[in-house]
Image (cartoon, rainbow, N blue to C red; front, side, top):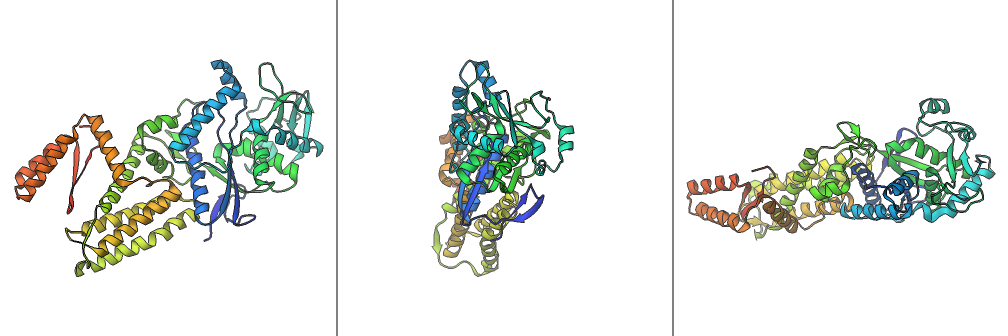
Length: 494
């Protein structure tokens, strides 16, 4: 299968050819652990989780690294504000993020390194840069000299003068150029610090990713991912310091996900318009959150509203309902009615085409939006199949339905991280939760449903319709099937 990715560096869609197949090396920037993570962090984590899952599904051996920044100006400032050590603060939010990822069904990367655990590697890399003349020491600080790296700006597509004109960087007397960036920061009172050849201090932000990526993955890695907001300066600086030190290309394919927005404005803590992952998890099923985060192409912006997430929740529930009904099918005869053969043949074609179309969408620059569309096309085919099933279900109906359900749950579960739950358990939990929220008694609802079913069997349709109206007013949605009445609680207010 040919896989193509839009490479931020070349600005082109390129065929993906790993450096040493079947091995793939992949690095994604993790969080700076100073506060609760928000939906923007979740999008990056879920996007690269799906990439990790997809590459493994098609046969690659992926070594995936996602780091934690556990020492940083923001961490130190917040720790001082709340009166605990930076280490305690970072540990608190690393654990919180880990819990969020587990709840969102994000697989653990191969390695999750922390900056403070790789000080020797960071110091070694800085020493190489000083030795080669790309970095200089000023009063215990070490800076990278951007003017010494002629290709600086190649990722963001701007030259040094353009970057300088647009940079919001306060000039420093210590720097030789306004865009020079700190590799090592000299010790300040009350801040964590480590011994180094230039005196006690701590690493700058950018150097940690280069040091950890090269430590675990080698001097040239296949894929590096992160949010669009990291292109400059973070990833630009990673390229400069890494390639200056090794003389080799640092990353072969750069992939960047678009931002989560609120009212078309980037979601961020600085703007105060963020929604935490924990807030989302308290209100929405984790698979619905994943479905929302993957509903647009990863490079496009994704605008958040509670309604849109709620719509994805309903879509997810509808798919589980389809799987639940398929699970209740029992064959009572061998052959399907002759008149249904053309329709069954068409549904069989749609089920057979699903896997190829689903994987082709993901192979085309990880187009999760298109992959999800193929998934719901399959659901439509399965619902059409259910409509063809009468009271006497044929072996052909049953096998076709089970085949489609298996394909959906296997591919969506293994790669998108959705439809992983047992449909009956999912439906039952949703019913119990919704009944509790609306203050409805299950026994009363089911008694009315049994009474209605009896009225229908007795062909007392006036009574059956009156009971349906009563249930509808109580917020109960009914779906009559040849195998009984399926019911659920409406999401709308009564």
